[in-house]
Structure formats: structure tokens, C-alpha cells
Length: 185
Image (tube, rainbow, N blue to C red; front, side):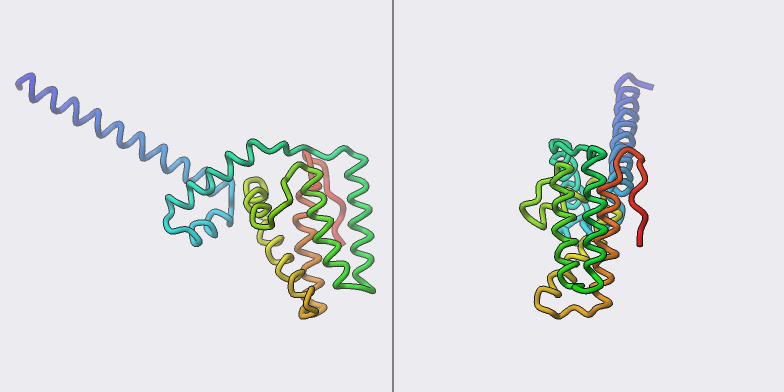
């Protein structure tokens, strides 16, 4: 076998090994994004022009999130939020629409206390998706019902459902460092 032929075989093998390594890295990254974002991964893929564009978007969210100063709540503040949630939940009996609006404001306040920016709802979704992708659909659903209730178009059952959905995200945001969230009602 000539030196040229041997060199061509070695180069071909090296190219194949590099391509396999790149493919493995690509698929590991995709799997990591799926695991981290949960259902939000598929939602982003469905909304994007391509899977690659969606994965770029999710990576951008991760980078932005890494720059945020997300922090656990001090015990006293966590207890205050727990009491505030109890008050909102009790308000539901007599004023369900007001309670849903207050639940939305309380979740937003809790997000801000944890260090999440709270200016734009769409940006809130993106920022929350990095650590809370599995409960983000709860927030979306609750927020949609809250908007319906602003026009007095939400049924009592929808309002009750919004409270349950807000509670899912509230408990997750309240949960820091493995501590148990407030018992659900």
C-alpha cells in the first residue's frame, strides 16, 4: 500500500471520528435541553421555524438566565408569602375574580423577590422556562384565565382552575433548597 493511500485512509478515519464526535455532542446537547426545559422544549420547537432555531432560542434563554441573580428567599419572607397566599385563597370564597388577580400579582411579586425580571409577560415565560419548564404551562393557563376574568368572562370553575394553576408555580417558586412548600388546599 502506498503512502498516499495510507494517508487517505487515515484522513478518512479521522474525519469520520470527528463527525461522530460532533454528532454525539449535538445529540447530548439536544437531550440536555429536553431534560432541562421539559414540555417547554417541544413547545419552543413547535413555535420555531426549525429545531435548530428553537434550540438556539433555548440556549439563549439559558445564557440570559445564568446572568440573573436568582436567589432563595429568607425564611421570614417565605413565611410572609405563604401567609399572603392563604389570604388570597381565602378571598376566593367571596371574590373569586379578585382572588385570581391577586394570585397573579402575588406570583409576580414572588418572582421579583427571587430575582426574576417582571416587566414583560413574554420575557417572564422565557426566564421561568429555564428552571420551571415543567410548571410553566400552569402559569400560561392561569394567566389566560386571569385575562378572561378581567372582562368577566371566566366561569367560577375556570377561576378555581386558575388558582390551582397559580398555586403550582407559586409552590415551585417558593420551594428553595429542598424545603417543603406550603401544603396545598
